Length: 141
Image (tube, rainbow, N blue to C red; front, side, top):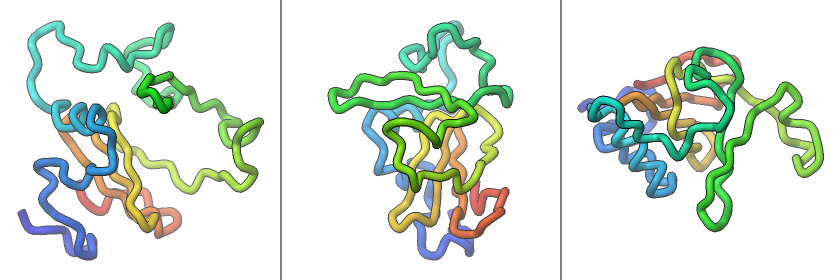
C-alpha cells in the first residue's frame, strides 16, 4: 500500500491496524476484528453495550464513550452538552473538533505529538489531522 502523501511519514500500512498500538490490547483486538464476518446473532461487543440505551444509538444521536478504570473495568460515559464543564474536569479542557467517522467507532487514539486522531470501526480506520482548525475530512481512510 502506498502511504497517503499527507501523512508525513506515518505508516501507510493500516491493514494490520499497526497505527493503533497505543490502544489497550482489548480495544486493539476489537478494532482488528470488527470488520470480520461473525456468526449470525453473535455480538462481539456485548460487554460494551450501555444498559438502557438503544442499540441504534450510533445514528447521530447522543455520543458516548467508555472510561476504563485502573483495574480494566469499562464504564459507559455519556457526553451531555455540558461535558466539558463540571467537577473533576480541568478548566482548560475544551472541544477542539468533531469528527464524523460515519459509523460506530470502536476505538480512538491520538498521536504524540497531538496532530492526528485515528478512529476505527466497521473494518475501517480513518486518520484525521486535528492540527488544521475546521478540517472536517479524514486525511486517509
